[in-house]
Amino acid sequence: MTTSKTTTFAPQTAVVCVPLDASIYNEFVIRRGTPDIDVAGWIEDVVLDYLDRTADDGEWSKQYYEWRSSTKDLEAFAKEHGDPAKGYHWAPLFLPNGTKLAMHYKGRQYHAEVRQEQIHYEGETFSPTELARKIASNTSRNAWRDLLIKRPSDQEWQLADVMRRKSRG
Image 1 (cartoon, helix red, strand yellow):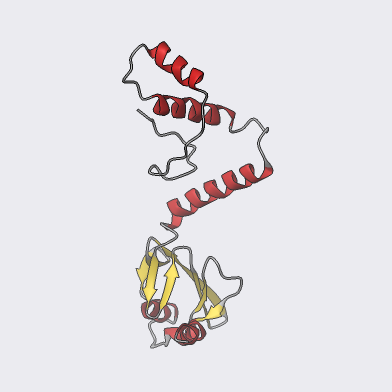
Image 2 (cartoon, one colour):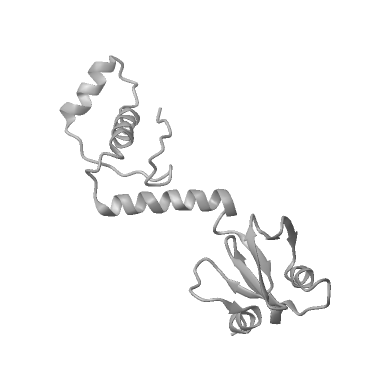
């Protein structure tokens, strides 16, 4: 039976066949002494154990260490913000988890963030309209014209209304 390790390269359902000399396969069967052994699972466990033991030995490619670093970054992001594929829907916009919102009001800049599919500001959750109103001391505001948005994939802040117009084509 295969055990789950920290190193994961492909989904559990994906299988890659690697040619293995028959004498090595037979050695596994003989050592276990039973014909009904899951040799593939056993070999997989051995390989995963090897990968876990040697993950930090500095002998792997630069690409491996970059991938590993980005994987840890994704795990930290998901823990703090939630699934990066989910977010807040402000029709017609989709604001993925990790999106930052800002508003300038009376010479100050205020910041909020999308986490766990909600807009968070000062320990509370708001809709965009409620956020703009809260920042503006409960005065009536047009969130489309007041809020700036920067999604995790964006390089620049954009006015919500501009993003809305772009999304409509």
